[in-house]
Length: 315
Image (cartoon, rainbow, N blue to C red):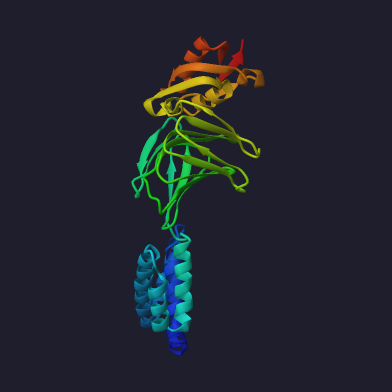
């Protein structure tokens, strides 16, 4: 009863601003049960709040449409005159948030050990995710954003010149419009291999920038200001999609890391000397045990079974 009485003495614009605040709050990707409980309590306290919330929902929908249109100035001015100063301030906040993609939903894509999956995004982009990987995708009105943690993925990006596709991997940003490439971020090392199109890789501080073309690979250690660009066969980088692991002069430390993400026991290196060995060959991505067995036949190493997994030691 107290809330209803208070609403009768509060200017209508204040109720409308509160309704808009609820629209914003409930649009967040992190909205939870507590938010909904508090919202229902607020909404049920007065009929004026229900009416204001209905108007706020309509306003939010209209501004979503305006934000994605080429021009927004004229309808924005019209609505400001119609809504009055109080509600116009809150409405302007909606426009700014929409324009900066603040409330675009975030989609989390993950795979478990030994699992690979394919995802199709709403814009038509396809992401093939390697085992033991995790990344977050946000498709906004102005940009399409991906944040990679420990992951490897092949991106086949749908072309959209109005919305660049930006991947943040550690201290690098990868920017494309429409292309196909492989990104690997494992243990503080990032690799980008291009199969089709053009990929721009920049440091987080934008001080260095490299443009990659098909058949090129960039390798970068996080925290270091330099990166190595070399010719590289995209089929090799993307071989994991076909159930094979193809290597050409790859450090054994990377091979062991790949094997341990397959199903089966963990694969470890006995020492740094073993990890510094380079390996060229093809290994089945069926499981870590069979992969390590083949690796022991092709490389100058011994594979030892231990209680904590498989141990690779240089001969």
